[in-house]
Amino acid sequence: MSVMTAPPRAAARGSALWQVAITELKLYLRERVGPVWGTGFPMLLLIIFGSIPSFSKPKAVYGGLTALEVYVPILIMMAVALMSLISMPLTLAGYRERGILRRMRTTPAGPLRVLAAQLIVTLGAIMVTVILVLAVSRLGYGAAVPHQFGGWVIAMLLAVAAMLSMGLFVAAVAPGGRAAMGIGNLVFFPLMFFSGLWLPIPDMPAVLQHISHATPLGAAYGALQNATLGQWPTWLQLLTLAAYAVAFGLAAARFFRWE
Image 1 (cartoon, one colour):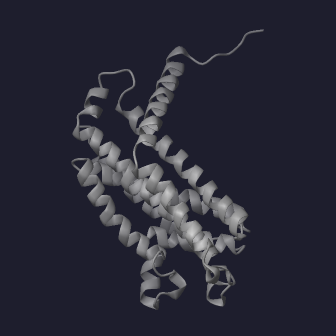
Image 2: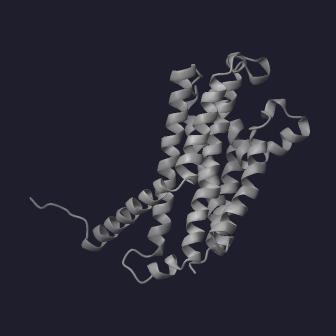
Image 3: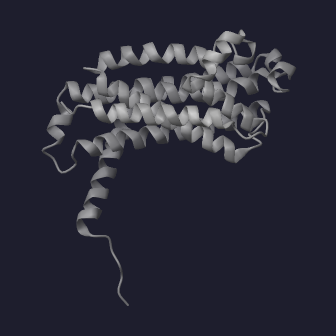
């Protein structure tokens, strides 16, 4: 009986990718932007909000959810945005600025594996943070779990795709690490405002609500909240997220430079 094995070149490529991913993970854990701000800060806000008594009272304006339950998807989107718009572009643009991506072309790993490894590490960090936020909010403060889990997962995947595409675009156009951080911050704070971080979307004036629904994090908030309430996200919300993912993904591919 013969045993099928992967072709040597394919196995080598896979091994090289995971070696680069492990290296990128170690570097990621040494930085403060991803672990501290991307994971730690949203968790800190969750604990603070969960400790406020008024945040545990259901409100009709929130569809019967508590203020804490309203903030759970906002904090998740905050983590996704921090890792996608600031942490990842800072690293990739810094690599280009220091000539690392150019030098990687002469190695077996290649620059594409660095890019793939960064996406793997960022996705892994996002997944860990999402699980932590959901677990702590549920087990620690009794927050509702998504009743329409399938819709919640689809909305989450599209939201992550949209933010990663925007992050890759920032990395593509930024000349260096500091510029990437500056551009990322300029994009991050308006998006977080329209996600409802400072003022929940249901409490916003009608004009701001309409603007919010057209932003990626505003659409993500609406889709995730619908799923939490047991409703399927609207097609407009999902299409909005998909449009951002495709548009910025194509733009990033068009403008990305290795040196």
